[in-house]
Image (cartoon, rainbow, N blue to C red; front, side):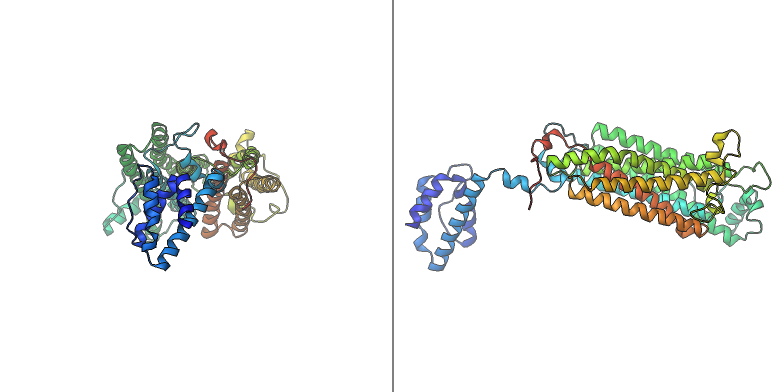
Amino acid sequence: MLESRLISLLRQNKDLGVKISSNLGKWGFTATKISNEASFSTLNQYRLLSSLPKLAPSSRNFVRRTFVNYGLRSFHHLNHKGVHRTSFRKISTVAASAAENKEGLKFLVTAGPHARKMVGIWLFTSAAWVFSMVVLGGITRLTRSGLSMTDWKFTGSLPPLTDEDWLVEFEKYKQSPEYKRVNKGMNIEDFKFIYWMEYAHRMWGRALGIMFALPFSYFLRKGYITVRLGFRLSGLFALGAGQGLIGWWMVKSGLEEPASEYVEPRVSPYRLAAHLTSAFAIYCGLFWTALSVVMPEPPADSLACVRGAAKVKWLALPVGILVGITAISGAFVAGNDAGRAFNTFPKMGDSWIPDNIFSMKPLVRNFFENTSTVQLDHRILATATLAAIGGLWLSARKLDMHPAVRHLIGSTMGMAALQVTLGISTLLSYVPVSLGTAHQAGALTLLTFMILLNHTVRRPSPSLLKTLPSVAKMV
């Protein structure tokens, strides 16, 4: 009776026979082999089941139960085709793989998922390297090491290897305004420390250029990179090469005699801001491109979440721009050494607003060169940034959105609060190297969160939108 029912089941679902035959070999059952290309004929089905009595009773019951389980699963798949598959769409990469070569989705990397993974790892590593460059540059500036090397070569050179070489470099430094006005009497050992800091910063940047160029050439030769991605990465590479020139242009300004004998030698705040802004731009470009390679589709599990993400996008973009402007204003604080003035909070000294914030002429100079105005601007921008991110977080709580987006907004809010705390602590502590470096790294970390948020709330491709339900299914 059971055999006749199974034969009837197999007639209705030929694919089931193929699945059964592929598993019989695991039990040592020698029945007629079933070809995947050919249909599972009724005769072969009959021979298959008629051989059941030849098995031991325990094996026979096991095989029968397996047949029934396969049948139930098969009918469930037929009756609910498509629903089960859609409910497991949890991350954007799955959707992207399913939508490959379909309408509205263009990959930056060809040759499949493995190539995308390799290129993505390379780009994320490059972005992390730039991040470390920014941190190392902050340490170099805070330890006043940036003016220790008085010449520059694009390809670099070996460091001093003998005592005579060190004395030559030290004599060059003694001719600089910084030594004469700030470090007069410095010994050779102290000079070696600041020299190694600046040398490490320069060589770390050159190493980044090699680390970027070699994999780039390899992926181009393999044909992984599309024309669009190739042009974008070439532009980032050119900007990275120019960053070395901008760095020397900045350092050169600090090697010139100050206008007044009462002014400490330091680099131009404009050139420092240009150097830091360029580094931030390279980092943002690399990080955004890496995200686009590994996550061509944003996370979305329903049309309601897509609409919620679109509303968040209108807020996330201006907030991200505000975070960037605040970071650049910090470069002017560093360039004017404004962090070592008005080391009180929330007031600036005894007043909320200093009296001399517009003392320079023309008026616009105050926003970039006046210590009081520069620090006041940075305080206002930092407070506005924290308030804007707080408003974004509160607004997002009322919207339907993917859990990943919601968690990301919460993390961004936490990072913003931490960055403001670091800034206040750095100011009250008179800018120690540890806190100053952490504050600079925190600015880039907060910008990273905003880039990730803006990338995550993009609009999905038409091919993915067609597969999304109106409302996310509850699991």
